[in-house]
Image: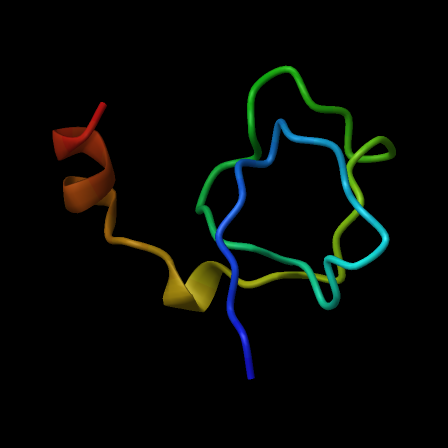
Length: 55
């Protein structure tokens, strides 16, 4: 199985496969109706403290 990481701001491609959004917060500037994704899994995201450390 191949896992590929892509930025949410890049357009979806037909060979992307199953797309999982891994973020606690919805991405800025992206409408929910515009994003192509199969699952939004908040359980596997970095902690709030870790996320804040990188921003």
